[in-house]
Image (cartoon, rainbow, N blue to C red; front, side):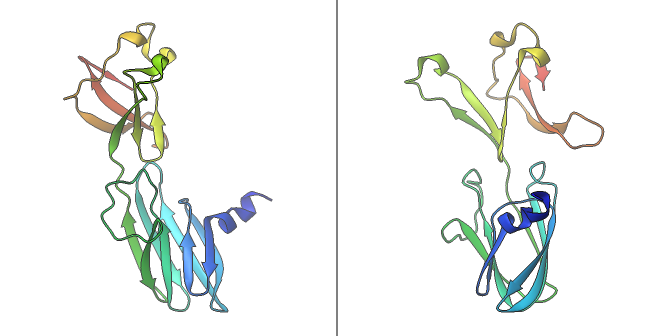
Amino acid sequence: RILASVTQYMYSVDSSTIYCHQFAASEAKLTVMGQPATLKLETNYPISGKLRYTYHGPEATLAIRIPNWCSEYSGKTEQGYAHFPVQDGSILELVLPMEVHFIESDPRVSETAGKFAVTRGPIVYCLEEQDNGKWLKDIRICAAGKREIGFNDRRRRRNVLRRCFRDHAVE
C-alpha cells in the first residue's frame, strides 16, 4: 500500500502550481485546475543530480524543491523552490550540482574535534574499518587529493567517493 501512495508525498498541487518535494523516478497522475495532468520524472538520483520532467496537462507552474545541500544552484528560488512554467508536452531538464563537501565537526565536541563529514548531495560518506583495515584511524585526507565519484558494483547502483588519501585510493 505504501509504494502505491509514494507519489502523493512526492508531489502536491495548489491551483496551477505543482510542487515537487522529492526526487525519485516516477509518474504521477495529478489534477491541475480541475483538469487531469501527468508528470513524469526520470532520474538516477542520488547517484546523479540530473532531473528530467515530462509534463502533460494544462498550463501550470512546476515548483521544484532545491535542497539546502545544493549551495551551487545558481537559479532563482522562492521559499526553497525553483519555479518553471510548463504546458502540455513540456520537457524540463534540471541538474542539481552535487559537489563533494567537507563539513568540519563542531570543535566544542572533543570526541569529534578536527574531524570532517564528507558529503556529496544528500549522501554522507564514511570510512569503516571493515573496508579499510585496522589502521583506519591513521588515514588522513589530502587537501590537494583528487576527488572522484565511482561505482562499486557492476550494475552502477551504489556510488562511492574515491578520494586520494596519502598515496592510497580509499573507497
